[in-house]
Amino acid sequence: MSNPSQIDQIAERVERLLVRYEELQRTNTLLSEQVKSLSQERDSLKSRLSAARARVDALLQRLPDATAGQAHKGTE
Image 1 (cartoon, rainbow, N blue to C red):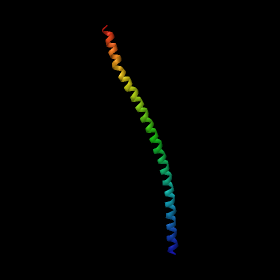
Image 2: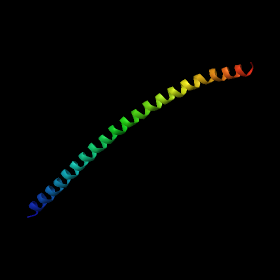
Image 3: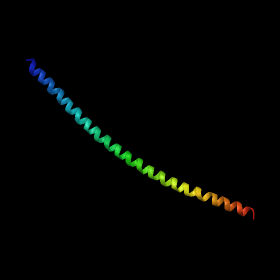
Image 4: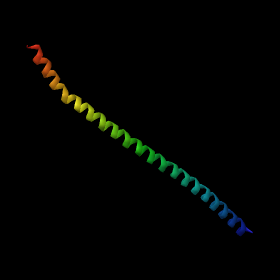
């Protein structure tokens, strides 16, 4: 009689393992989607940062010319 009990215990454990496996698969899918989304957001932010840096660099390059022009006007 202990054999059916052992088989039942093994079957129950297998069922629990299968449920846990399915839960882990769903969790993994959700995490993979989050990683993909966050990677896209990071890439977008990096692109925006690069564009902002370029604009700031362009403005900084214009500053010395504007400062030199104002200093020149002050001496006239």
